[in-house]
Image (cartoon, rainbow, N blue to C red; front, side):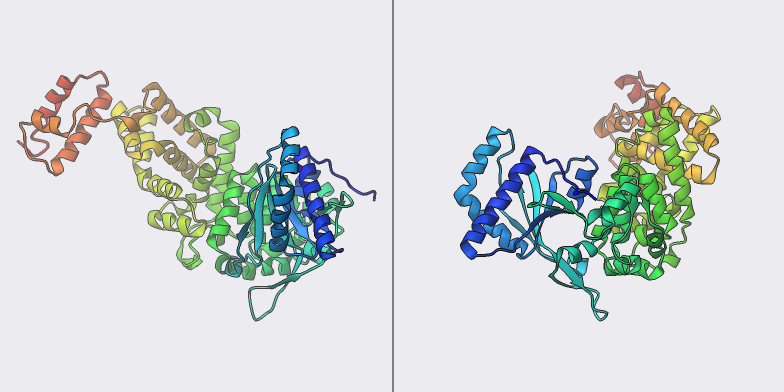
Length: 493
């Protein structure tokens, strides 16, 4: 096979020149002759796919990332002005940041210190080639210097194990399968899948993410290993939930969340991923298959239901929409759903609260949907529900819609919610959550003859808000007359 070459951008060419010039000076000062510089991982894969990447990992054959990063800093103190001038002349970002050390954290399966910086608009990590030696007595590997082949073989997928040699300016495929797997669109582990996942269980989710991001198929042996219960247990207990959440978040925000989330269910990973890892999976009492129905429902909404998409805007926060679909099986477990989302995938406070509120407010939403479809709804019936939902009302309606799809027939559910959303539009209720009573608390008390505040006041505010929805043109004087007429109902008569 002829050597594979890559076309570099001006910034990449300048960065390459800077790296090689720094190495030349190091060789002159130290006599070092064996240092090989390579770019590796996702940058090489994306280049081959014609996708521009601004993240470059620099793999060093005989120095640590810290050693080379420090050498680079010293080199730029003396020669940096030359590269800055060249960058400006070519329209390249000339900024070069100081190196920053990211410590190893074996307890979170981050086994090696990384040195990071930013040069010429590129985010750069320096790290030495390494191999990971696993001991059966410890779950954390010993990280040692390795050859380029050893470094390639320890990676999660063959398509992520390609190198670009800065000297030969060619792609190196030490697994002997990476380039072929890219041509065949296959995600495969360089070594035996079970051992690969046992060494780092997060690789299960990473491979799922790459498969749905690239549109590749996961190789069959890897799929079988992904179903292994010992791998699931290791993923649940060994890997930090922050790292799990990052991978799941990237799947949900990626180009094909439908396939990625279905893979999670297909490999029986639903509760391993989305449940609280500190609670026994038997205690959850949820049916993971319901998530698959919700995923299919959301996909069909996005592809077939333009009216609902226009009303609910599920594409504006794609990750949130798929997050809600993922937690539809938790519909009867409000507090547990919130806790599972916080602890399972480290969802943000905002996302977890939207989920909990969507479950808690679903009965009221269902009642409003039913009233609209029976042609019995008043403007207030729907407006008050949306007011209670607040700014997240679209997400709450989407959750309720997806849950109804789990329990009913797609076209029937779509019809019911389309009529409900049409009612909202026709009655100009999209901003119902921002409606405030035309009278404030003191004005309400004045209209009722000046009683002291108490629990009745909240009831009065709600009563007034409901009346306003049915009388949108009412004046302040109309409102005062209305609230005064409710004195007895408020327990003040």
